[in-house]
Length: 414
Image (cartoon, rainbow, N blue to C red):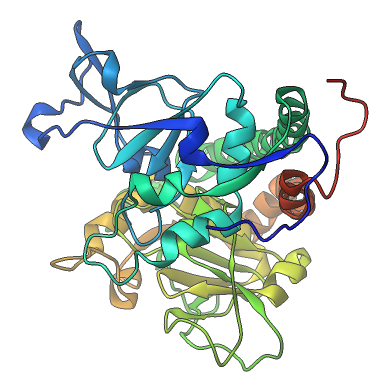
């Protein structure tokens, strides 16, 4: 990939990644030699799925030696996958699989600076674009080694990386706040709707097809007339561009990565789900825990995003929105989704499967009281998400300018 910048700051130089870094591939380990229990002499075996799914159960293998080992701050590139080939990742200590490789820079190249260079959307797109036509897309050392970029002094590299990392730290802090707020709402949900210790509870229970439920409650469906409905596949015509959100763009309940810009006329066939106010979305694939909530206040995302058909959407009446959201975040829903998922190659839940999911529905006044109790959590989460999007957009706009020397960091000293 040739750098399009014709002028770079004095003291910088053009180089290629192959000139300043070395590459080492991971190790192939058969499934029968991977174990879910750790024991002396074993090490963590780090696979692609460990980087893409935070809920994945870790695997362990016999220690094959230092050659394949990575520390948390080491740079790892994913070699395979139409959605993952060319992605730079880090953060897990262990032995990497052979569908990834480690990138080790020389002493005059800052590891964090190189991480940010490789995180640029243009770099990922360049590496990934030629992979889609292959049955088994794979990044080669030659492709990565030919990447050309402008290299500043080590001091300035560190200053650039520090600026970008500080923005990432702020984003991560907001995400951690969201996790705490979500956990608070989930704890209240469990107390009210699993343990049935809700305001006004009498302790009187009745038998039902899903077990005992409080008197005055009923067994209903996830898609229940008067309370919720499935969002139909199809989108309205729109002008300009929108962000296409694939399931790969979501981890747990927040957006990650860069969105493909689409028009109504030029979009993937799967770009055909339109978010609406007071709607909840979840990945259809079994064992995939990816969720999105669109509240009334999230109008900007509603207006600017199109979702993949890999998501199913449920629109709820406002009084039950947070009740349904907390239920869908629960382990109970995940188990039911997996139970009703079908398919020989891709196991996923259909609309018919979704309509078979049953749950205990509280009276409207209990659902309203729950909404009042947890609304502060979700209002704060929505505000945090807006800040995350603003910070992410600023970081992504700043990143290539810093890498090309178009914007310089003030205050650093060589």
